View 1 (tube, one colour):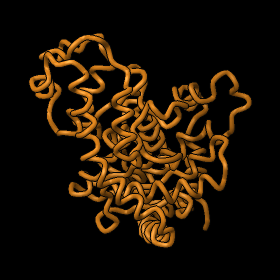
View 2: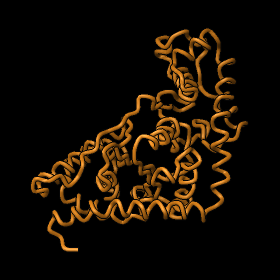
View 3: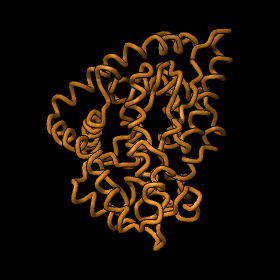
Length: 332
């Protein structure tokens, strides 16, 4: 089992990133070979500030290590230091089809009505994603619901490349999706129908992993709720997205079920539940914040960790890249 997954370095991690993905990455380290990368090449598909991208890449690396990514168990690196990602993307551009990319939901969402003004990189973003995983012969890729379409595209590209140029051999492994059953979908504290997001202009909508105890308690206290008490069972949360979100966060942090949380707090109002949730958040996130703050200032150590990971990734990538060049009849 070889797992490959990436995250864009667009600022500090928040609770949704941690409970929805990063915590599962940490668990996967003991289940197979893992490569985790900072998708800095993807980040330039949209307008960005270069100095901020540099700082965010280092900070994201520090945050991942603080969350439990062990660079002795896993390979942690940033895309830019492994040129094979870009090289393979160009080779796969010959196999990918415009129609396939035009159907990508995220392309439609991010480009909006100004498709003519969007970058080519944004349009071909899914081909780079395909290269990211096919390069390492990934067997499994952790995906959320919003990324399943991109993984399906990667499989389509791999299958067509194998058929067209493999001469009966499999050049690329077709990766399978991993959607962990315990992956939590964390919503905004201000709107239970919207995902918790770094792009939300309101900082009160999310719990950042760097928030101190007072800030966490304040955000939970001001989180949007309704006037009804908590029900005694899960079905009672239907039509109450904010209540469902807060109970779901509690269950995910405690490692229990929503029904177990409601057995404990059913019949109580949010005046009792919110302080308990805030204290649980503080107890779980304080060690991460403490370690992150210690790591983030040591840029030399972060750079060394990323460089070491990139060296390992380059060695793993080279055989696949060489086979792709050879299959296409390209001399190197």
